[in-house]
Image (tube, rainbow, N blue to C red):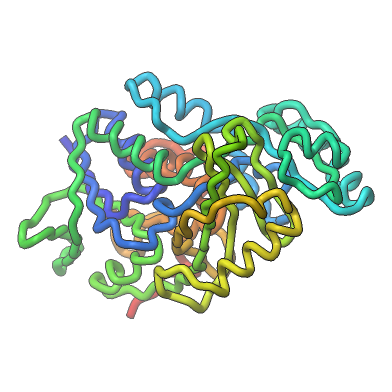
Length: 372
């Protein structure tokens, strides 16, 4: 049986490993689980259809990712896994002028024809928006997308890894090192032991560069530090509220019966995994303007994760140059929780030499990987 080793167990690597194990492959997953992993800290909104981004390749990834989630959740439920962190509670996109609201509503109705998974699309007055999310200011009208969902990065990652192990895979919580001989054969080493493999899949996020360096490559990758605030409001029934997409790149959502999450910072200079006063202040200033009802909430914690991204702001997916046995995928950025499971599925298809749905010519490694 062919052996596959996946290095990096964020949402992308966990999905690739799950889909390989689902096909009955011999899979080993290796991850150090360092502090600052984007998936571990992340909580996201699955509602890509209202984006202002113009890149068609990226839009394909996130819309396919959103459409794939219900099928994935059904498969995981079929394995007896229930704590997945995915809830289709709907999403509201808020606007401070009627002009902006009307423009986006027109776009939403047009895209609804192409993407029926959006569900019902409605235009809401400020009062109607507050009925769905009572903490909001009365300054904002909104568009409601019934097919929008929320996702816990930690929960979906853990669910995928549990499913992978149920399918017979091994999970090693340790550091992986790579060596290559003159013929191009690559060996994976963990704590002094060598693990044989037919293919290695590197999905190590912002930590991938050190692995590629071991094989003689440079990686042009950057990171974005995201801080996410957790607030407690036990007197509110926040579990049933929709997710909120707000101006300034902000969002709000709930993951537990009493907890509100607010994000996020987008710091490309800070590389520490610690929360900062500046980051918390920035998030709260914007959040209090959008949702003054949070003023009575209790601050619980701030989670920090580093999102990997490339200069072109789209992922890179494919074989490492010169190697037919090393696959690499990275650079999902802020939309990783939306696209990660789908890209992982496609990566597994590529690894077993099945036809992918994606045209991977748009996601080559040429612009991010170079020989040292």
